[in-house]
Amino acid sequence: MQPDYRNNIASPALLVFKEEVSRNIDKMISMAGSPERLIPHVKTHKMAPIVQMQLAKGITRFKCATYAEALMLAEAGAKDIVIAYQQNSPTAEAYAALTQRFPAISFASLVDNIASAELINGIFAGINAKAGVYIDMDNGMHRTGIAPEKALTLYKQLRELPNVFCRGLHAYDGHIRETDFAKRTAECDAAFAPVAELAKQMEYPEIIAGGTPTFQIHARRSNVMLSPGTCLLWDEGYATNFSEQGFVPAALLLTRVLSKPAEGQVTLDLGHKAVSAENPITKRVFFHELPEYEVISQSEEHLVVKTPHADKLKIGDILMGTPWHVCPTVALYNEAQMIENGANTGTWAIARGRKIN
Image (cartoon, rainbow, N blue to C red):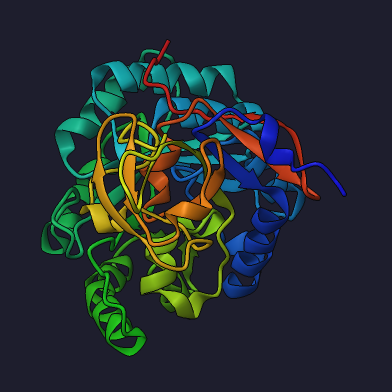
C-alpha cells in the first residue's frame, strides 16, 4: 500500500493538485475558443508554475492586481501583463521601473480619471517611454471605473497626453452573481451594452471583459478578450453558484483533529488565519468526506465542528476541506504544497506580498 502523501505535510496547509489545474486550463481554453482570447487573472492563485502551465498551452497574456503579482508574471515569462488596478504615486513609480526591467514585455494598467492618467504620464515622461492604459469602465459594480457617458471625454483627454496611449476598455462585472444562467446572461448583456457602444467611437479599441461568473457569456462576443481567474482553482462557492461551467476544485486545505472537547465535537487546526473568514461561518470551508457535520465556531487558529461521527475521528486524523472562497484563502499562505500523481512533489511560492521595491 502506497504511503499517504499527506502524513508529512504540516497542517494547516494549502494543497494544489496539478492534474486538476491542467484540466481547468484546458476547459478555460475550450470555452474561450482559443488561448489567444484569454487574459486570465492571476489574483486567485498567484503562482508562477500555474502561469507557466498556461504559457505551455499557448496563453501569453495575463491580468493581475498587485506589483508582486506583476513581478511574478514577468519572471515567469508572460508576454503581456495588464495590471488591473489604478496606480497611486509609489506604485506608478514601481510600475515604470518594472517596464524598464522587462523591456520585452508589454505592460498596461487602468485609469478611470484624468488625474491618475496625468500622474502616469509624468512618470513615464521621466523615463522617455509611453505607458499603456485601459479605461476602467463602471458597468454596474460601482467600485471603480468611469461612468460610460463620461468615458469618451476621458478617452479624448488621454489622446492628448504624450506619454500615455489608450489600449482600450476594461469592463469588470463582478457584481453579476445571479445563479440562474439565463438571468445572468440578461444582466451581463445589459451591463455590457454601453461598453460596446463606446467602443464604436474609439480607434481600434481592445475590450477586456468579465470574470469567471460571466466568462461563458462574454465568450460569445468575438471582439472581446476574456479574463477569468477563479476557474483555475475553483472553490465551493463557485461550484455551488455557477455549476454549469464544469470546472473542478484544484485547491484543498489539509487540517488535523487537535482536540475532542465534548461529545460529538472535534476541533481542527483551521482558524481564521488558515481559511477565508469574510463569509458567515456556514460558508467558509466544506468537508465532503464527513457525511454529517456543522461548523459551530471558529477563532484565529481553531475550527470547532459538531458531528455524529466524532467517535470515528481520532486525535491527529486528517480532513480535507474545500474553501468557499479560494482567492483570499490562498492569500493567507506563503506557499502551496504541489500534489501530482498522488505524491507531494514540492512547494509553489505564492506572490502575496505588498512590497514594491
